[in-house]
Amino acid sequence: MQANSLRALITCEVTTEFLASLNERNIKFELSGWGQNGITLSDSELVAKAQNCEIVIVEIEELNRKVLESLPNLKFVGVSRGTPVNVDLGFCEQQKIPVVHTPGRNADSVADYCLAMMLDLSRKLTSSSRHLSNEGWLFDGKLPYLEFRGREIGNLVVGLYGFGQIGVRVAQRLINGFGATVYFFDPFVESSSYATKVSSLEELFEIIVLSPFSPDFFGYRFFCKAGHFLMNSDALCWTPPPLVMQSQQIQGQFVSAFKISFVVGFVVAFPYIIYQIWSFIRPALSQKEIQKTRRSLGVVSLLFFTGLFFCVFLFGAIGFQLFIGLFFEPKDSKYHYDIQRYGFCYLHELGHGVGV
Image (cartoon, rainbow, N blue to C red; front, side, top):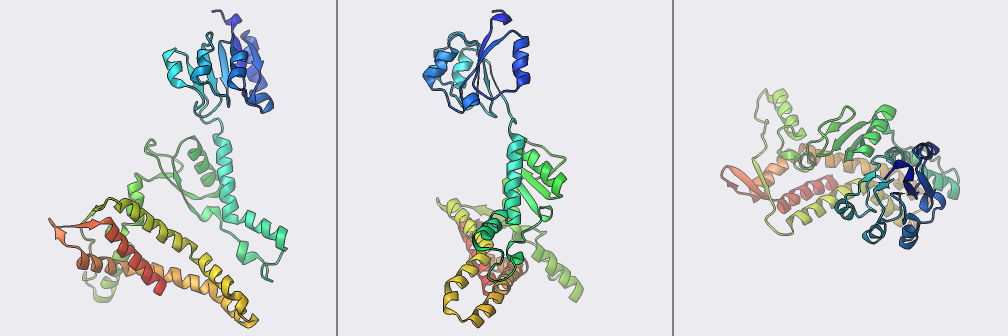
């Protein structure tokens, strides 16, 4: 078939430069559907318009098997999307119809939106704007600085799960624009000049949850240095016990993930939980009691996080080894742990943090 006889149906948004290139190649085209008026063509409408076309370029409209079988002249399919999820690729492969798509076409837009959401959350833009619109400038009779001051993105450590077209652009914006520290996990990306790769999700799990079993655990290093300073001895230089983590029950992994999620959620939400408790009892307090208890909210949160830090990162080095010695027996010079029982140890340390 000669190039000057090709016909195309285009139902996506296109540039004038693209249309000009079609004219240069003597390709006759019709613009219709979603890209022109925001109305998606039905299967029957799509077949009627593309009946005599060799080229079909879509964005929203579906090229399912029924539609494709009704287009005997079809020679080429274009999809203006990151992945051609709206095309029956199996049928096209059988009929040797090439299908092209546009990976990364909206990567910059999504990266911008992702960064906008980060800015909104870190600077509390939505909550402060809503407060200003509904309740005015003051917050509980005071300037809203402390309530809505937010955090600087440049001081954050950001983790990205996936480092494809969008992830790379997000990292570029965070690092070049704000100076943030970025880590990422992606099994298909070897390295990056923008961000630091974490080798596996298991590594993240080991760093966060299994840290007491690492020789570099903060508690071990602290007590070792303390022993050198106070006694000039290695008596406090403990080493972590050999660990073999196992799930000895069917529901073990699920329950452990639930426990860990609960603990992390409780820790992160603790200041808000305390605030809600205080808001519940505030109507029963006098004005003087309200003023005194309001000041204590920040102190309570500070003491909680301080106690959590000491119990997990300092005394955790002692506590975990104590629990291991009490509850577990070594086998073949190694300790075999049920992950659920290990989760109990972590909850116990968290309880110490709450108590402190």
